[in-house]
Image 1: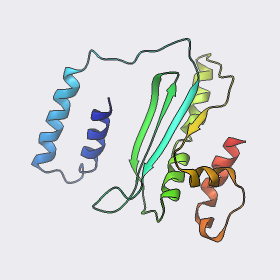
Image 2 (image 1 turned 45 degrees about the vertical axis):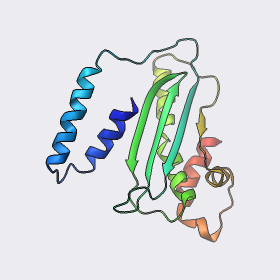
Image 3 (image 1 turned 135 degrees about the vertical axis):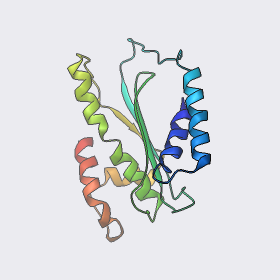
Length: 163
């Protein structure tokens, strides 16, 4: 599953000015997808716990040094939603890149509402997983310092969601 997602992300980055190599890669991807149409996502009705993983690869794009942000949300073991995107600006720290990943995962609020529309009651809070200790500390600390003033708006959204 991750191979088509990653490949699609890479191909979309050259959509404005494609070259022959991009068309060859697109054909290869379409052949792969056509050969895997019989695969699906199993839905387990016993485990209906919503959880999300957010991550960022800091300055991983070699051409412009921008970070790539992504998240995926699961209902039990079933993948419900995912998103991968290059961040709009260059971030100066891995903490800021990871924190932006947490903010991008704010779609979990929408997912909770959608699940309630389908009469799926979530009794516990949605777990949002992140592997960056500094970003987690920033998300839980309402005190800003001079070096983190530029992400105060993002912080307030995440902090209020956590409350």
